[in-house]
Length: 167
Image (cartoon, rainbow, N blue to C red; front, side):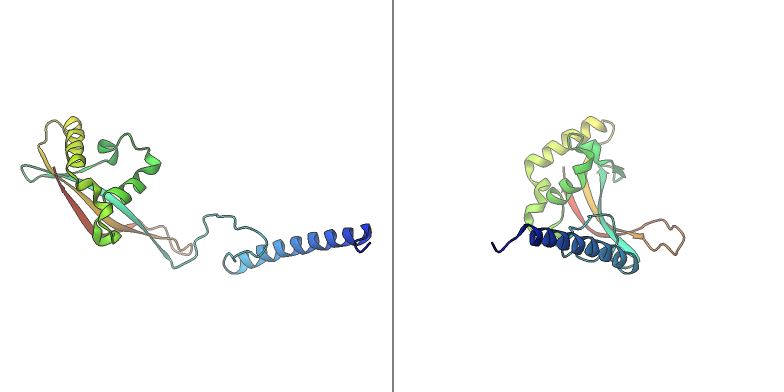
C-alpha cells in the first residue's frame, strides 16, 4: 500500500510543525510590523489600528429647533428609545443619513411623512414645554488621535452634512 502508517505519521507531524512555525512567524511579524494577513491562521479580529495617527469615526447628533428659534441637543434615546443603544448608530446611518453622504436617497427614510409624525409625537412627549418645528440630524467626523507617543488629546469633531427633518 502506498500510505503506510509510518508515512502518515510523518505527514501529520510535518503539517503540525509547519502550522506551529507559521503561527510563530505571524506573531513575530505582527509585533515588528503590522498584523499580517494569514496564510493558514485566521485573523484574530482584534482592535489593531492599521493606519495613520488619527482615526475618523462618523457620528450623528440630533438638534431640535423650536418655534422661537432656540435649539438644543436631543439624545438619541429621546426619539428612538426602542432601538437598543448598540444599534442606534447603525439605525441612524441607514435611516437618517443625507443622500450627499450615502449616495442613495434610501438613507433619508426619516423624512417620510409617517416617520416625521412619529418623531414629532416622541419629541412632544419628551419635551412638552417646547414647540419643536424641526429636527436636524448633524453628521460629523470625530477624529481621535491614536498615536501612542503623544499625550491624550480630546477628540475633535468636524461637521460633514446635515439632514433637516421638518416636523
